[in-house]
Image 1: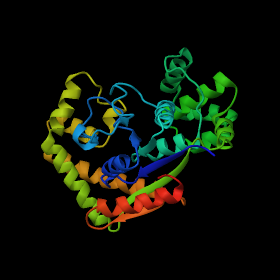
Image 2 (image 1 turned 30 degrees about the horizontal axis):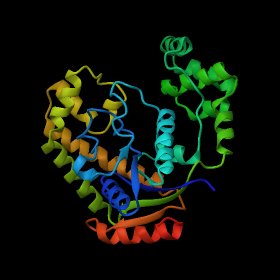
Image 3 (image 1 turned 90 degrees about the horizontal axis):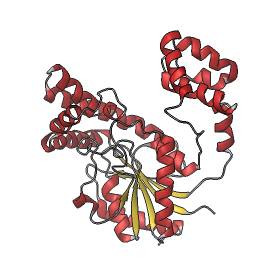
Image 4 (image 1 turned 30 degrees about the vertical axis):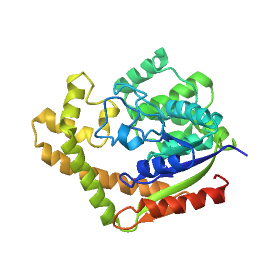
Length: 314
């Protein structure tokens, strides 16, 4: 039986961080973040990164592990997060994976492996140059000859994945489709109890998202984004495409209205929460927890403890 861990997930602003800390305090746990943006240093306000006060002395892992300029991949996350989880288990404590990035969570739990690659390899640079010169359709046709299944899923404008798929094929002689099929047959890395937080009424979730964005603005989101840009972080890098940073950076670049940018952040966050809910509902084994107008953490702490005891964790 794979080691047992707890997963707390759900859409943005659903209370994952607080519940993870409360359960960690009650069950000798440590938190491992599953947020694709909290990994970046100097990006605190817009990512709703937990403050030391919110952590309440509970160790948190996979926060502030990369610079904003880095192109952080799911493969790198899985390697680092698995090491963190295994370290928590080795200390006899409960790993609590908490966050809203479904791809990170699923990849870590499944034991999925990723074909090794070197971002600085000459082949990568050559393929990127060919994409720029010949265009996506030409490279996609080439990929289709070796890996028709992957090619059928990609859009000609998806330069990153087209280049990656060709790189894997040319480097290993195996397609990404073959690699994914092989890894899907592997046993799961961890046996997880998954608690999915959500709201009974989406309007209550939207109101909570709006309040969070207002709090971010009051806490200095505009200044945080301005400082990142002034330090040389490229506006087009992956980190700066995060909701909150992309909209505010555009406003600062054009001299636009930051208040209007905040309203756009609220809209994009609500749209993102809808995609998250769709993703997490695919897991039939997850235990859903629905909030009323406001989260009742005392009640959910009791219910979660019952779930844990049923799962074999006291």
